[in-house]
Image (cartoon, rainbow, N blue to C red):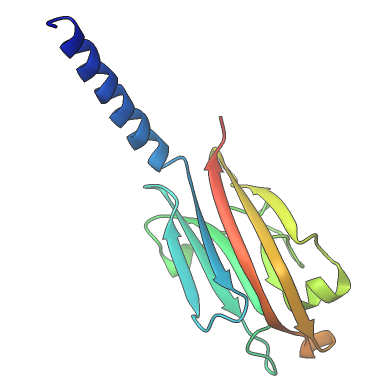
Amino acid sequence: MKRVLPIVAMLFILHLWSLAGGQNSGGSLTFSVVDERKVIARNIDRDLLLRVVKDSSIRQQNFGWDVQVIQKPFDSKSLSNLLYHSREWHGPYPSQVDAWHVTEKYFQNERELEVRGYPYRLKIVLVNPVVEGTGSDTRFVSGRVKISWRRKP
């Protein structure tokens, strides 16, 4: 019995340690494409913040979303989206989820992006998107966005 108790205690400690280590290895966020929040934020780990910012056009409230991974502490003056492979990027990027992208089939509804400078991979899945309109009048009517992240091995 004296030998069994330390083994059981050691196994229990190892189990708790593996659970604690797994908490920061990944996570997910799911929301409606017509969610009314302006910004949705989640911690990825102690250094990174996931920010999803509503992208509205002059005519459309549900135009789309901009998915960002930024360094903490958050400072709007030094905002740099670590999902961009380059700091000088211009034009549409796979971290943007806009209604016109769906209409034009500009990006696939499922995409994976590396977090520049960090060992994370982010996956964006657009689930059952329904859009109406054309050009700058394009808007989401329904659907969901699922964003998940995981630490690379």
